[in-house]
Image (cartoon, rainbow, N blue to C red; front, side):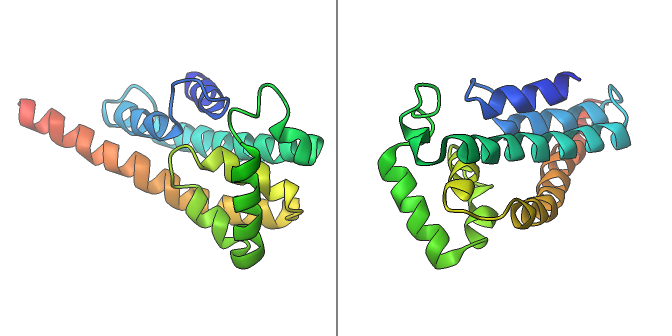
Length: 153
């Protein structure tokens, strides 16, 4: 539950980056604090839920999202215009690239709805990409955490 909460807090711009939560999850698995399968499922579901929440914010507020007091810190009018151009030119690939840049992920998922990307298309792309992200990030720290443990002995 704590891991899920950290993912949600990271999405609303509290100083807890989602990548740090993924690395923490791998570390916890490596040290036997959490079990692998439940942790992976919580992280995967958490990523999809938080990404879809951001998409929903874009759907609810549309272009007015840049005027909303809470979300204007995440997405400026200039950034929204830039992302709209990117979505028109590259479509779904903006989601693939945007997921991996710190500070851009939230902007991309909000802008996806503003630019009228379908929810189904977004969830399919995000679901496939989240598998890769979860595997790489948790795997890196899992093996890194295990090697730290081995070096201590």
